[in-house]
Length: 306
Image 1: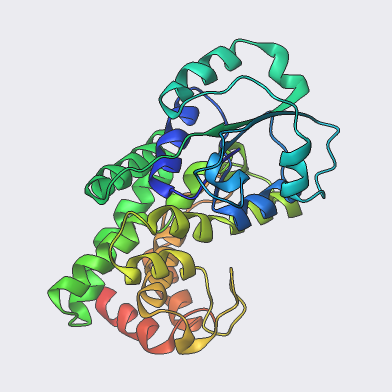
Image 2: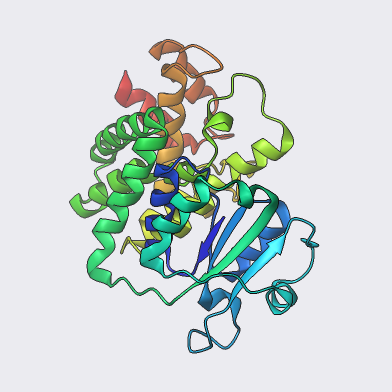
């Protein structure tokens, strides 16, 4: 479990941990850390120092070693105040620490919470941060990365059909390419499961739009992109997630990606089912206009594909 207010640094650490075979859970900011701490457990928990102290990064750099018996409903302030000291690590020693931990069975019995010094990658590293996220997705879930590339190409075509301005077309294509980036931190066994997901597993999957948007927020200049990523699983009738937005309250790019994303998912094989024909998929898109999809966008998409 890794938490930081800096999504760029978070992406770098998540990539490094995943490359060593760890399943990674991430939280951007104090609020998400508190929610994640209540719902999930992890043998290693790494927290940026700025999230451990209300006073901010000028406070002494603390570190903690917590056992699995800790009451996870306890507030983080109390948790940090009662923690026992453990060895500190610097952010550039993170990989060394993980390699040592992966070969040491001691962490199987403990919760390790290590505070990092302040990290400050500049805005000039935005593109590098996005590329790291994309590489992480492609490495961990190549089929999701391939799906995202198809969705991006089809979204670009749809954007031209809708006569969007060139800059808007580019933002739509970027949002479509990155729409599932939050899945990079989800367990592969859940994403590839052939059977129906249980409630905890489905809760994890439903978290990917918000996780993806939070990771991208400091790395992508356009708010249209991050909003599209956050809301691409909303439904026009208000029955979607994560926030149950309805109708035109759903961001425009998110409504576009919802159509394209679902169409590609229907026409490609998944672990739990085979593909359906293009004609059948278009018939379903038309049928779902007004419930799952914006009816005008659904009709335009079907006409374009036929």
